[in-house]
Image (tube, rainbow over all chains, first blue to last red; front, top):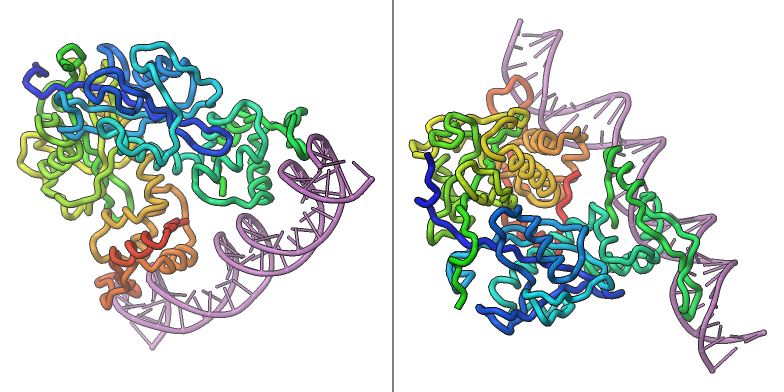
Length: 230
Length: 230
DNA sequence: AAACAAAGTTCCATAATAATTATAAATTTG
DNA sequence: CAAATTTATAATTATTATGGAACTTTGTTT
């Protein structure tokens, strides 16, 4: 019978790239580490996988322990296993990214972090471990994914304007979009529900509010979809 | 100082989804396992990661040990870490896929496999471990990737016809393409070199042979590319 | 030499997308 | 109430993509 002790065993962690959107810019949640190694340095929230825990469950646990948030979109970025990526020994990490509504975030009093911050993407230099590489890989994945799947709504509040959505796309994809064409295209997909409500307290004509229509999206999926914004 | 022994340690393997293309159909290389567990069953080629080995290096080693092939396109599919995926204990695997020219393949007399076979994609049921899931994830990745990056050429011989290329795309994407439009589009990219040679020994007008032009592709990349076949 | 087969190209009408011009509507601010 | 600002939509033009039909080319097969 195979004896696993004959083979290399490695420490296994998960790290989370948690994206948020603060009305105009894509941000990532960084924590200040409270433990060795890289104590007091900025890093992605992450921790060791438990004995009987599946990988995504571990990532969800870290997300919940850091942000208090559950039931959100989570996707694997990939694994990072450079033999010298962790100063204490061989530790392989599996990275996930998630998209949350920044307003739902409330730092949890947990062992993982006491200080957390929403950082602009140009501030992910000099993170602990190989976390910069992990962030870059996650950003790349997000950019690809958001073109063909309606994941971006996770970053917005439940009710949002079409301009909110457009700025979100422009910010993530780093492009400018034409307002009229963007509206035409996104409305034609039929995955938004136009609400009765409008914006309030703005110094101009208030915009209609919309919500994401999960049901219609699933119908679209079922009928051999193609969801290409742009 | 952090002591890794306080945390779970897992066995770490790599598994390879090696794609080949036999003129008309996409295939994946399966081996008949010679070791417990799942002895004598069909599986993906894979093995434990070595002590000082990076993940992709391990995947490249498995590829070379199985097929004799080096220097090919390899991409990470993701990690699979269900706690009960391996009957001997906690083993996490990192899956990679690669694209090779089926004619370059020669089964190596190695410990990994004595029997290997190019299997159609409808024959990936009932593989060892969670290898069916891994195959499905790899196929999905390949489908996405091939739309925007010129990776498909790895599956073809160095000299190929436009019809070869079209059938390759049709086979991977599971769609029909219009001959004229496909040609127009692919030639406009300027990433193919038209050779002086033509096909031989065919019972009809022989087709021009082409090769992939890496240099031009890199120029295209540099100038903010968009390589969208279809 | 005629038949066959697939390569490779051209013409063209239609359909689908994208970009531009133009106008109007709703709200706050001075 | 006029100015400012942004939402919102209609209509038009320009551009690109799709695909039918037919034709020429370069070979092999019978």
